[in-house]
Image (cartoon, rainbow, N blue to C red):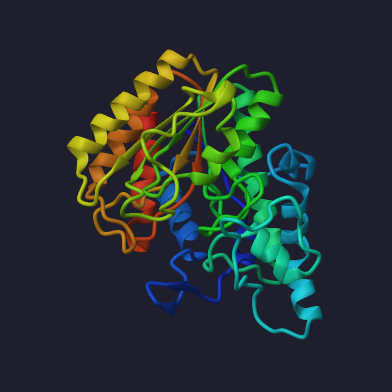
Amino acid sequence: MNGMKTIFSADHLLHQSPGELIFGEFLPAFEKPERAELVLGRVKEVGLGEIRPPESFPVSAITRVHAPGLVALLQSAQAEWEGLGRTGAAYPYTWMSRGMREDRVPAGLDGRLAYYSFDCGTPITKTSWQAIKSSVDVALSGVALLNSGERGAFSLCRPPGHHAGADHYGGYCFLNNAAIAAQKLLDDGAKRVAILDVDYHHGNGTQQIFYRRDDVLLVSLHGHPDQEYPYLLGWEDEIGAGAGEGFNLNFPLRWGTAWPEWSAALEAGLKRITAYGADAVVVSLGVDTYKDDPISHFLLEHEHFTQMGARIASLRKPVLFVMEGGYAVAEIGINAVNVLTGFEGA
């Protein structure tokens, strides 16, 4: 079968949130297994290409990007939670804030949850780690496809990743699949990698990981932090620091942004990627920019995702698409696969 290959693992089903604290209520989670299943169904429906299971990669590929303490917490939190006589998933109930110590990680479970997490929407269940690890393996298997000469590949990751930083998790994200993939591309011989984040929400974790580096350029189009989660990163003046100065490019956009303004920002971002001279591109593919997404406020239509894919193809670089957000569940498959078919058809 020709066409773009998709990497997918049914192990994503092992992570299912009991719910999240959002908008003043404890609600059913917007990030749910149905999302990935609908995207997979659409991949099959349009005959995009071969669907493969992931290879298994060592945890050392994760700790190239993430703090070992964070990785250990994700592996052990639920067992420790139950060891304290608690039921349900492991949630934090306090968080790091200004003036608190960052140089010391508390020994107790609640202290480590507070240290490493930043919201109450990303619970750790008994089987979450298997799903988290499989999502990383899906991303890394996509890298292997690019290394083998594929023009493009689709890593249908779940849980998503771009809110996870080197030493923190949140926003439905535990480990940063796109960042781990970018690091693996570099470790495998790429000199420069660009990450294009088109998710509605700012990829705060990706920015934090690479902010002081010049071997990864991050271009992000997202809801303005004055209005939108995660609120505390994503302004235009965040351009990188130290060796990374000039290698972080944010396009914060206001509620109500439609295709003309969004696509103009995309064009500016693609020009920067071209000037950068990346050897490969990782796309954090969130489709929550869709007009009917329940937790987003942009106005893109189905056909705009096809155009987005075609514009990304104009870079003429190997591209790994890594699935991130998108919560208008009925349409998520259409919009995600429209990007891929737009890329393939260009």
